[in-house]
Image (cartoon, rainbow, N blue to C red; front, side):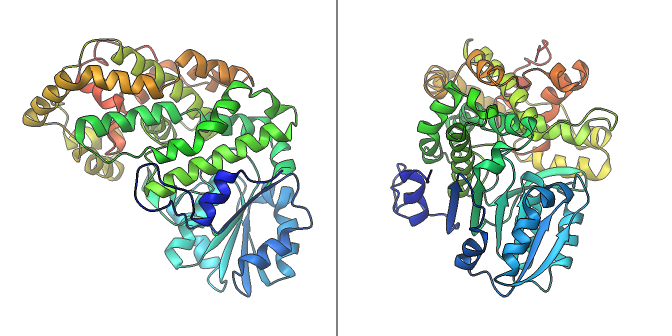
Length: 433
């Protein structure tokens, strides 16, 4: 079971860019997606030539699943520093700095894990100038091949420029043995392509922001098959798991070729980030991809509702920096305000935006419809593997979830359908997520 021709061309730098210009290029040297990598780890590390001392980073769970195996393999090609994080580590700046300190004598970092460990290593490596590679342990998210990391700084979760992995190693048998919730999470993280593309296209048409088609072309073939038949993911079908693995890898590369998370992280991710930032500690934790499945369905319904009506009419929001500090606290509030102020409408920009909306709304609606998947079909995909589809499934209180939908736009400078809904008064009229 090897990589698709598309992936091979992308890695070799020979894949044409449908947006024009030179062939697409990514910093990753190799992606290995195989039925099993057992016994190949030393050769894979040797081919990457990462130096004579390697820091292998895991947590107690991922070390048991794959980390010890990787440590033994790494010891055959280099000196090894074993860095074992606490159970359930959090991707924040402080822990990344601890990793950088512990790995100061190493030439490179080897992440053994999924979302959090991968983000921590790509950020720590970027801060110290050390390359990193990753042995993936679960198909739970699409960040293995992206150059940005979701890192919390002073309580504010941000997508921060980091670095790409030199190598990404995926053992499909390990993926298939991951907890079902993590498999559902990976499908959930993949679900947002249509809503993220719609948000990005909206910002392009209304604000003249850059937009690319290439990231979505990478996903088209595998996404259609994956969404139509997700059932094999939980039954040990490695062909289905390979579809999910390639989708996650190619989604990450889509972000990489754009130099940012725009093609895979828009309004649905803002809602999820708000939930992670603001949820009470006594609420049960949920995986990122589980949240994205639910928030994607919310965004899909919101986009459908707006696009089915006449051109929205916006007005400048009557919120100030003090409102942010009151809602998020002084430090996080100031950080969020700096982001939000970049896109905040005033009376003049609201008037200009209304003219754009009046002139272009039918065209925008037509273009978004062409790249969208209905909320009902997206929901059916997740129900196909008994995944969460509602806030209630995640034990999120109704009022808290509604606050997340209404206020999520405040934490990032990204313009999405959330901004259009808020500034046109839709949220004031009431929204049932």
